[in-house]
Length: 208
Length: 304
Image (cartoon, rainbow over all chains, first blue to last red; front, side, top):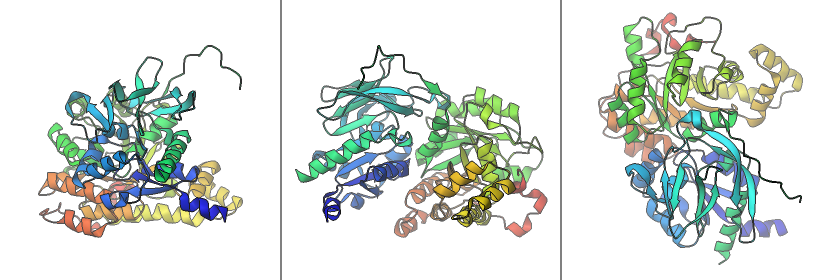
């Protein structure tokens, strides 16, 4: 049947599950009809076509990534062209530079980020955000963005491009090829477009 | 599609339900550690804690010392905020509106309206809707959890029995919440309305909870976790994460115990890893058998 054929071709999207709101990402993948998988150890990455780095505490995540040998296999996945989406803490892990001293973790996205750049919890906020579509053919689009003790992207390097800025000019989304880092949380705002993009890219990468 | 006119300034909204509940969502799968000094806060952050709870005495010392336990000295909380980049939580007494206002003024990240401190009001919990800062509250059963959520709590923790190093009450409380949600599944609207009335919460809240099959906010386990295995057991029972109080800094090797509990919370379903991280930790905190604690001294019976 057509359904069975479609299922066979479906890409598998890994969601890093060492800590953070990975269940919300898995629920969002489920909502767009994609197959998600929790990743805690390198072996879990076998056969994964795309990857999500969820929100959470980047200090805790970095220690768990390092301890369980997850850094190299994630980098290898990116090298193979698999799309990767990092949200909030996930974006911090992707950056090539972290302001105020912390060593970078994955260095997959040419940008400098500052943790908790907007302040503590009382300064967490939500807003309508204009964002460049991630699709080659797409223009700007508006989405509901929730920022929680969020990082700011201070600057992007030559290999990356800015995808979204707040009205004050703060960069909150950047992209380098198939690697996308965003400061906010589509997964807790009922926003599915970024996940759909990731699944489509993963399907393309898999066929290619 | 119609073209948008000149872009209006995007409205920025703070302290919304999504941001309050959202921070707790980001803490999931993690360990929140009680700390009493900046040095302990650094140990916690180094170990991979997702947040710290700043307080003057850990629950086992509060239990030992007796007397009235109150909100911590603001200087002590500020000292901890100054050295760590992870979220800092602090405790207010049950019903103590002003302690909560002070903690909000200190710009902590979350307030724990906690039975570990001596209750300030024997009738009302804090009306948490009035605050910009999010609250976590304790519960022993579904009714207590939903009453707190109805008052505005954006995160829950099952109470357990703090300061005992004994996991048995924590297990009982999370299991009770789960079983009570299970028991309401598939029930008629009439039965759900009766349950809502009995629990003194709106029907809509009960309906939402039963439909989701879990509490509508993040729920951690607290009160008695002393080992990596205790943390993993909590996760196995369906916790979203764990609070560890006395269990870390009352153990023989706090830094190692803290790291091991973090690992066990992530890899709770992997016994080989649990065996590895549980090894060589020396003595855990000395625990207390429940039978030896008179009912009047049970912290979990505070709040309703």
